[in-house]
Structures are given as C-alpha cells and as structure tokens.
Length: 137
Ligand code: C2G
Image (cartoon, rainbow, N blue to C red):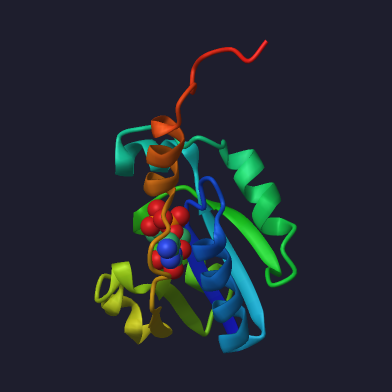
C-alpha cells in the first residue's frame, strides 16, 4: 500500500520522525509532500526557520521515506494523491477530520500526535535561553 503525508517539518524533531515512521509502517511505501516556503508563509504568517530545499533534503535522507516533493498549495491534495498513486493519506490528529472529504479517493488515517514537542515550542525554548543573541567570542 502506498502512503502519502504532508507537512512543513521545520526544525525537524522526534514528533515529525515518529509520524513518518508510523506512516511508513502503515503502508510500506511513503511519499512526503513538504510545504513550500511560500505556502508556509501563507498558512502561518512567517517564513520557516529552515528553507524548503534544506527541509526536503532532511526528509529525503530518512530511511522511512521513499519519495519527496514540494507541496505548493493546500488545495492540490487530490492532484498529489492521484499523481503519487497513494492508497492512503496519513496525518497527525491535530488535523483530525480536516481531510475526510478525500475519503472517496483514498483511505484517510489520523495518527496520534507525539505529546510535548513542536516547532513552536522549540523556537520558544531557544528564544528563552540566556545569552541568545549575544556573541560568544
Ligand atoms: N506531528 C506529530 N507530533 C508532533 C508534531 C507534529 O505527530 N509533536 C505531525 C503533524 O501532525 C503532521 C506532521 O507531523 O502530520 C508534520 O507537522 P508540521 O510540520 O507541523 O506540519 P503542518 O505545518 O501541520 O503542515 O497540507 C498539510 C500541511 O502541510 C501540514
């Protein structure tokens, strides 16, 4: 079974890894759509910390990932699912119910999100560190 999933995967962390590993186990072949920088800006009102070229390189290097492409628009999910011949869409359950309309095209599976870690939390931790922004010369 071929699985597809989508995400920004900015400041790649273990929550992202666990989602991708479980998605791969659900099928045996995993395609990942990595949100473009432009799409991220539209969605979140800020640029990602890591650009799309680097985010794609990291995802491509993972043993659990077979194919990677840049997701240019949230509205193109049907086209991507057809293009990559996905039998199932897997997303974390922060997206619960959001992609149910695609169930006529493929299976839609939501996996439990890994607690206590997110890109936003990582950014806040780094920002709150003493000496951030001062030189260490
Ligand atoms: N995730 C997770 N546990 C976390 C953090 C993230 O399981 N602690 C999952 C999310 O649920 C998502 C994937 O990891 O399935 C990628 O998360 P993000 O990079 O935050 O993706 P997002 O910005 O939500 O983009 O078209 C959909 C979007 O591109 C999804």
